[in-house]
Amino acid sequence: MDIKSLYEQVKFDNNLKLYNFITPTFTYNYINNTTMKEYEVQDWQEMRMDLVFKEMYNLESNEVGVYLNEIDILFYINNIDNPLNIQTGMLLKYPNKISDFNNFRTTDNNSTDNRFNNLEKLVVPNKQTRTDKNRKILQENSYVLPPVVQDVPTTPVKIENGKFRIGGL
Image (tube, rainbow, N blue to C red):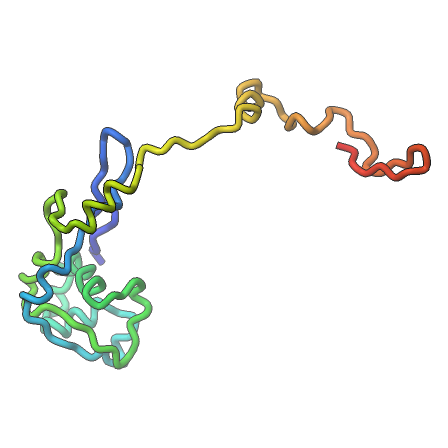
């Protein structure tokens, strides 16, 4: 199957060297403007969105591969996160025409929806991770053992002055 990968959908910010998971790649804006149909999943189509897709649009077997890169839209519309969850008897909504699939994709990086603009302001992608100074020194000097471990181990349990002493690192 040729399904669009996350790598193709998510934008990469070259300045920060990070992927942008904030900007949406799908939109609900066109659901109300697009004619939708319903399809009931049959026994032989369980866990097989490609077979469901073929029947929804009355495609021949050799035509299905051309459109399978749009199958993620059907998952999005029906709120399916795992294709293996497609069960017999499920009612799946789908656009009347395959050409309507593009209505559900966002093509610009600037969302007009305030929810996403606020989210972008709250998320700080350039946060630096704190490092332990002692661990950094340990790594720079290529020490084999952490500083709390002795080169020559002692017995783990001792009796000194009538008291137990535990810990022989």
